[in-house]
Structures are given as structure tokens and as C-alpha cells.
Image 1 (cartoon, rainbow, N blue to C red):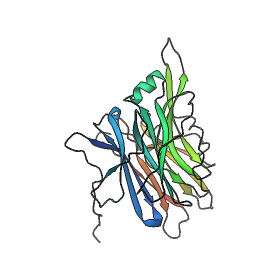
Image 2: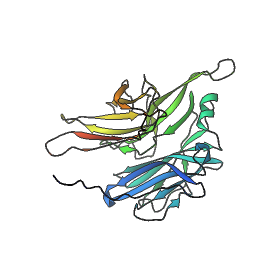
Image 3: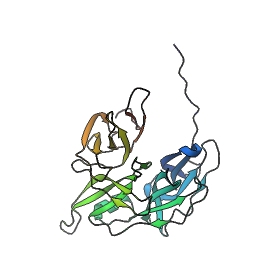
Image 4: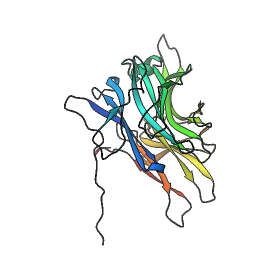
Length: 293
């Protein structure tokens, strides 16, 4: 019986002695040049209100790491990096949310006052240089707040660029002067014109869904569906399918074989072509699990 081979491991982001730490990583593969881009939030502490800048490593074997100085808005902190690569144009988009000041997510949910903006920067040279920031945010109605991924976006066979996202919908705006109820739902931002314009799809309708990732799944009959795997406060992961490339999702289902950690973890899912003779996409799901989960 042959011995197992484990590839060498490289630490991409590590907490510094000063207390600066790195959270919410995202990894993007650029196949035409066999390049990996690794992104993360730089935080002054582990608290999400202390997020500072987004950082990038272009080569996992290199020791240098650079701050993305253009991926910022004045008086905002940059969070939730979500890169996506357009194979048809060679453009890398790095989406992120810019949150006003030190406003925590919990405060936005409690008050119903959204402080997040949807932004992106682009690179046409595989991450060497980056454009100035573009702020796509329009007036958000009935969302207490929203965020991306975390993780990476994908490009579908149709050419559509697709970003996983979630929002806290305001179900009851006022209750004795205070926000009464919000419900989180996963959904997509998408573009059909190589990033010139963006729309958002409908929420997963039934179950509470938060951080999520998505993958396009090829079926044996040649069709394909969009698969979403999302964190949920309901004790198990939630999965949902879309047959129109993410504009609308069917009702979500609890996956009892995928147990959530006590406090949740965003998880990750990727798809790849099955071995020869299988005309399907195989999925790999990964998530941190605690010993008592």
C-alpha cells in the first residue's frame, strides 16, 4: 500500500507580535498564467470593527505582502475581499465592502442603519497594479446591512460574473421606536457585460442564510445548475439551487450531514471536473469544526 503524499504547507497570513492580525482570506486562481492571488483583511485586532486595509500576496512562496492602497474609501474600513477573474477579458475584479468608521455589523442589524458600501478595484496585469476604487452602492431599501462571500466569485459558462453575498432584510422597521426584526438571506450580485454593470438576484426564500459560496455544477445530461452552500444559525449548513444562473434560487434545504460549529464558520466550497467516464462536477466542501461541534 503506497504512502500518502501531503504537499508542503505555506503560511500565507500570520498574526504579528504587534497584535495586527489577518482574517477573512480569499484565494483566486488565474489559470492562463498559473498564478494564485491570496487576499485578506488586515485588522488591528481580531475585532471586526478594527479592520483596516486589504492585503495581497501574489505568490504563496514569496515573503512579501502588500497593502492594496486603492481598495479604500475615505473614513471607511475595507472588509470581505471577494475576487473574481473574467477569463474572456483577463480582468481581475476585487470586490469588497467598505464600512463607515468602526460601525460593527451588530449595530447595523440592531438599528437597521446600513453602513456598508459595495466597492471594487480591478487589475489587468494579474494583480501587479490596481485601479482606483469604484463605489457601486445605490440606496439599499429594507437591508439593515449586507456583505460579500466571504471567499471568491465565479464565472459561469454563459460568461456571467457572479458574486456570493448575503443581506439582513428588515422584516419589521419600527417597533416602539426600535428595529424589531431582521432575517439574513444569501443571494448573488452578477454581471452579464464583463463588469460594466451589476444587478442583484433574489434571496434564498425560506431559510436563514448568511456567509456563502457558490459553484456551477455540470449534470450528466449536459445541463448545469448553480449550487449555493451557506452558513445558517439553524444548526446545519443550508444548500440551495438556481436554474437561471443565480437570479432566482429555489427553496433552501438543511444539510444534516454538514453540522455548523456553535458560533458558525463561513466555510468554502469548490467544484472540479470529475475523473474520466464521469460527466459530472464533483464538489469539495471545507469548514473549520470544533471538537465539541
